[in-house]
Structures are given as structure tokens and as C-alpha cells.
Length: 247
Image 1 (cartoon, rainbow, N blue to C red):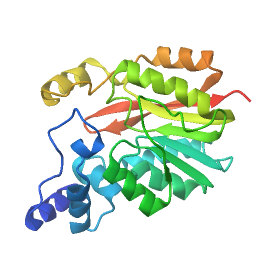
Image 2 (image 1 turned 60 degrees about the horizontal axis):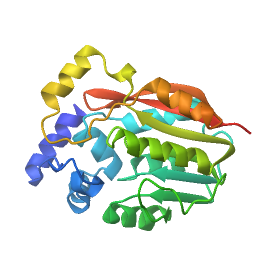
Image 3 (image 1 turned 60 degrees about the vertical axis):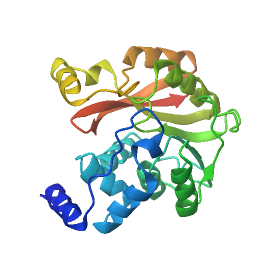
């Protein structure tokens, strides 16, 4: 009811559901900053809620992920340093800041308009992005490293390069959080839906990643799997994995 009501309001306001057909570039190609922010304001929603409720048709999805992370104890130790890869609109960033009060929150975001918006709104530190690298961040310096709805959109090698970097920058005892489209998310019915609804020209999206490959790699890097759960993504889902780095 809420979603359909918002869609009617958007129609009366003269706005289409904002989403570019360009799935090959960064977040500002897929989610144009100005148009998305304007559409959210027109219906009195935050950008994050607008994306969840209107664009993705999954009301409460971001908050449900944060709730699961809280239950797994990700925020229990009051992390002082958080790093997020590809925060985009900042919908996970905003809710993370409601769970903890880090002294430093770093972001690696390739879309300049969104990065500027996040810096201005949430006073985070935008790091320079290059080649799947977190080079500006020192080794063993971050309490929580996270990425949401990122690794299902990039190639296998891009995701793998980020995995090594995430393990490098996480301090002993810290947490690594990210979601991937594992085999758990790809039953025959879902695969049929992707073929039917996914359309053409998606390039690397959606990108699958073997679950066991992630678990084995992070184990080799001194990070053990602490928990996992499914998170909605439109008509499909991704699997959120939470790793703890050995102290």
C-alpha cells in the first residue's frame, strides 16, 4: 500500500521512477544524483528510503540488514573506525551511524556527486579511488569494513582484489561485512527470473560469487566466518557474510 501510494504521488508530481538504463558505469550513471534526490524530496522520503521503497520495491530492506548485523554483534564493540566501499546513496552509511559513533568513517566512492553529498551530509572522509585499491588506508587500522550491493555488480577479479584489501586494512579483532550473490541466491526459479527480467546490456551485473571461495579465501587471510543471512534485492537476494579477523 505504501509503495503504490508513493508511486501515485510521483506520477502526479511529474517524476518517473528514477533509474538510468546505463548499468555499465558507476552509481551516478545508474542512480543520477540530482534526479534521485529531487524525486525523494517530492514524496517526503530520505534518499535511502526512496531507493528501498520506490526504486527497489523492498521497503525496510536496508534497515533489516542493519538489524541482522546488530544481532551478529557487529556494532557491539563500538567501532571507532569504519570503512565503506561503494556507499552510493549512503543508505547503509546513514543507518550504520545510528548504531555506532565512529571517530572516523572512510568511504571509497567513484561517483563524485554522491561522494560530495555524503561528505557534506555525514562528515565522512572520502578517499581517492583507483583500481580496486584501498591504498590510502593503512594496514590493520579499521574496526569495521563493509560493502553493500557492490560485489554483485562488478567482475570476479574486481571483487577478489577488494577482498584482499579488506582483509589488509581490518585490524585484528575487527569485522568484515559484505554481500555477494552466492549459489544460495541462485535457485532455478530465481535464475529464470533474472533471465526474464534482467534485460540486456547489464555487462557484469548481476555477478555471482561462489560462497565457499569467499569463506576459504578469508580463512587463508586470517578471517573466520561468523555468520551470514540473505538480504533482499528487488525480486532476488544476495547473501551477507560477516567475517572476524583473528586477534
